[in-house]
Amino acid sequence: MGFDRLIKKIKETGNPSVVGLDPKLDYVPEYLFKKFQEDDGATLKTAARAIYAFNKAIIDEIYDIVPAIKPQAAYYEMYGSQGVKALEDTIRYAQLKGMFVITDGKRNDIGATMQAYTAAHLGTVKVGDMEIEPFGSDALTVNGYLGSDGINPLLETCKTRDKGIFVLVKTSNPSSGELQDRLIDGEPLYARMGDLCEQWGADTVGEFGYSAVGAVVGATYPEQLKELRKRLPHTFFLVPGYGAQGGGAEGVAGAFDENGLGGIVNSSRAIMCAYQKEGCNPQEFAKAARREAIRMRDDITQFVKIK
Amino acid sequence: MGFDRLIKKIKETGNPSVVGLDPKLDYVPEYLFKKFQEDDGATLKTAARAIYAFNKAIIDEIYDIVPAIKPQAAYYEMYGSQGVKALEDTIRYAQLKGMFVITDGKRNDIGATMQAYTAAHLGTVKVGDMEIEPFGSDALTVNGYLGSDGINPLLETCKTRDKGIFVLVKTSNPSSGELQDRLIDGEPLYARMGDLCEQWGADTVGEFGYSAVGAVVGATYPEQLKELRKRLPHTFFLVPGYGAQGGGAEGVAGAFDENGLGGIVNSSRAIMCAYQKEGCNPQEFAKAARREAIRMRDDITQFVKIK
Image (tube, rainbow over all chains, first blue to last red; front, side):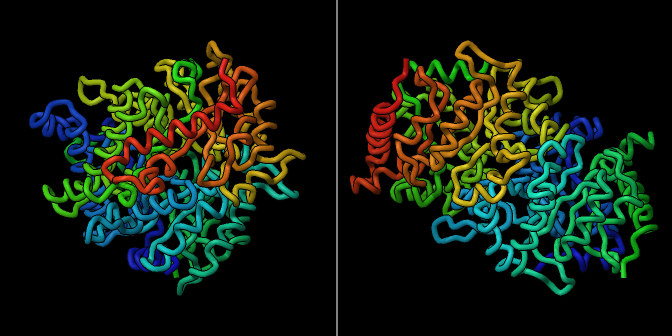
């Protein structure tokens, strides 16, 4: 309940970071793509197989030192239903290796439709006499613009199946302020959204004091991170924007509580493409990913002491 | 450009409505599901095949009188990558029959990730030497909570490939006001989001005066519909919430301009499940869908005169 499973993994690995698996084909070393192209030609199936092989090799190299992965749904949908199959396979493989999986889908809708998204990503679906888990992720990012009607359908599954959600509160992008910073009764919209997270999560607080309703708060806004950490004591933070987007380790420290808990920091491209930055043999892409994952862990844990 | 293709279809059919294809397995007549179950058992593949057969039969019965379909992504994702394949197939089949397709995915993200969603749903993706269209829909619903960084990546594709988007402005659900009605500088958040739609769409206005950046405005809020129609003269409206959610034909008339254009009204369950409501032979489900589509058209065009 309430991200306890994730927090235990973070304590176990001593690492409050998550590896974003957003595998555009440009990131996949050419030799790997070509191997599959020989079988099926330049098709979406080839792309999907190359991506899954890429993810699998990275997972094999990081599962013992990183608690979680965050596959971004867009990069799988980009290769059609074949790509979506690679998402299914990636989720299952990471879980088999003991990792916690956050599907970054920013899904949102209301009522029965939001129930369908819940069943898809966190729950099960009935087909004839069978109860089948379609994606079976551990957590899902969601967008709360539609209000409680968009969030309530998720909460029952969070409780009964020990799953979590992360609601977009203050996103890492430059234009996030266009709407999120606008004042409502003297307080920014993102703070109001944050308050709703506390409210939505109230019934699902786990042993570490955090609920199953987390929040996405960008590393690029360290002041807001600190402010929201105080304001939302039961809300676990998923923090994108470290590294590539400009968020530094000292800044992200504001996401954490006095026990070094309460947040997890994401890095995607810097880890997936570490082999390009290093200029090492592309065949070593997964080992380069591990080296960057260690560098990131050590960078963050300079400032975040997990107790 | 700017929903001209959709508007021409609306004029041609004399019907400003769209059929939502949200095919939960509960909606599919049992005889149809059983036919596929005999082949593959109770699997996601069986579910997906039954759903596609259901959609195809409905499309065959309505394509000459309804301009567009709106498949809701959640109901396909619910059956995993197999379900997503049924979404691909449904989009292609409807287009083959000359229909305009709006994928209701409410997607949202920023930068390269939003580009990936754009490529997935409205654009193309490069695999080796091939340029492949993954879903190839005509329009996509999106959520603007992240601001311009989430919308700009879509605009280039809207221009170069004659596609459209619908941004959530005022949604049809009871709790939409929790955030969307809150006042920012004296005006509700939804109005601010609406103003952004006018701004985002400014470069893409087509021959009927509407841009490629449409807005979702619920039929359940007729006053706001009327107000937004005046405020956003270049923004085409997708109007959910008619029928099942309580929006009436007289109310939705507020979505339209003096030429009876500027909006399209969605109905999903009432059409898909017309055979249940009618109590007719389930084998006639598609014909019942046609009867309900005609009833809806006639209901709306009492109040909306297309010139």
